[in-house]
Length: 319
Length: 65
Image 1 (cartoon, rainbow over the protein chains, first blue to last red):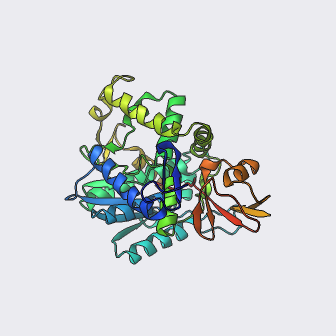
Image 2 (cartoon, rainbow over the protein chains, first blue to last red):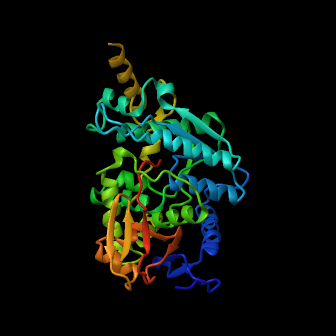
């Protein structure tokens, strides 16, 4: 297969676009497309300061690399979750968080970039797996508490440090898997909130997903071609998760119907925008008010979900 | 023979077939991997040669924000 731009041997083939490119032209194409999506969805401007949520994985490091190459003012935020990946209480762990932090710091140092590191255990007394265990949220898995804590902390830090926008490395496979899950359940509220941009509101930083139209495979290819070192292992708690199962199902579909994932996501965005599928009621934002403790917006009365969880953790730890 | 490596698993296929055929034969979903030979990415129409070692990189990973 030949590169469409130069005729040399191609390294990447994107069947959904009927496009094959050599390594050099692929490394040009990905940032060009990212810039196109940033402008199309009005994510941010070159004048705005961006905080990139960095996990040490291919998507977030790839995103940071692309934004900096495009000339944006992008700093990184790494949250130390304290996930070791120990298979049994006395077993040896894989040091998942330690390794992902190391790779994030290495990337920042190599490119002379600013990386904020926040350790959850230092901030809240316990690492994520222990917070989950104490709070009894998530049916024995820490993913619910992990997601809640990350959203809370990313928003807090973006606002505290004066960043205009928070960028995450969600790719199209992530978005399609979430969409698939929410469609299976017809979770209309979640469906209405899904998109490349979550606009800022009182107490909420703007959140953007510049990679939302790239397949996960394309981001892997970008990191391989660019030589970006990323954490290859999955989060040990992601094993057997629904989102990975949905991704695998969608990839089987994609193999027989190239472009199925892209069409699924893009047609959803079009339908959502046009109002063909849903009648948007702006009740969610209208009912938000500040949490009595941290001040971040919440739909619950009194304390937000995060602060309630932490109160429970503190009361159990004290007793 | 051609050796195909994905994480801690190894597969063997006969030389002369395409990468796509080799993946199907090994029951690996092509969309879920990137294939490399000697560190360079190769595509599904590549004819595999005797002695080739193909390293597959799984594209699905967890733990992102």
